[in-house]
Amino acid sequence: MRTLLLPALALLLASCGGHDDGASDDTPPDPASLCVSSACGSKTALLTIPDAENILFTPDGRLFVSGGTNVFEILATPGGGYEALALYDGNCNFTGLALRGDVLYANCFDGRLYAARLTAAPQLAPIHELNLAAPNGLVDGPDGELYLVNGPLATSALPDPKVVRLRLDPADPFKVVEQVDWFSEGLLGPNGIQRRGRTLYVSNTGLTSLGEIRSVEIGADGAPGASARLASFTSIPDDFSVVGDALLVAWYSSGQIALIGADGSVLQSTAPSSFDFPSQVRAGRPPLFAATDLLVTEKGMIGDTASSYGNRLSLFRATP
Image (tube, rainbow, N blue to C red; front, side, top):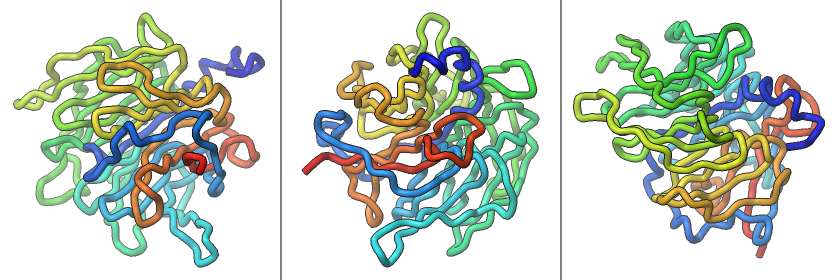
């Protein structure tokens, strides 16, 4: 991380965050086929997303990106470029994204959960008061529930690091019928949350490491089961994504993206400061992108939604 920014590190934690579309992609690329190194690939800026935060692909390849002002659907333009269409008629600091059936869910730092049916022109609207100061990463569960992270820090309250579970009305995906504090063991600065099968993964500033990925099992009865540290590293993480048996992780404070293997080892990573405070990385999906493309949200400076430093969605692709 840049030396002059070190005093502000605690502030930077306040809105790193994020989501996944739930379980691993339907046809994920082989992690061994990915280029996640500055030695083999390069970055291209695609378009402006203020305070870019999280990335979600639907199974049919629609792409949604959250940011500090809105949630956007990314569409290809006839000229070979891309455009971002806002889903919310307003302004909110959106963080985690999740997909459950044909409904998109989004957390916002106003303390509410939003949702939209994925019609041709989705419109987000608030559906539930979370009563949380820092609703961040969001993911769908294996039994139709949602899990969200409260953290790492809030701007208006003391830290309250935990994973929260939401249950939805089986007959109405826009009605939350239960909210419970679900898991907090070992969480100091949780940020992103993803799932593979019945295992949840949480990015976290740990009690003994600057950055880590923790796992926790979802029991058959819905209760949290065994928890363990999968990986640790010397950068504050933001959100990440599941790809096969590996994880693609945004190392926020060092400006890198990394590929972490099933055993927790770092298989590849880009050079330090190769991204402007990345907040999530996800493998692409046709028709917009190849499965080996990597989409990266670059947040930049927290609260700055106008400069050319960060505030973008970028593409990292192997050099031909």
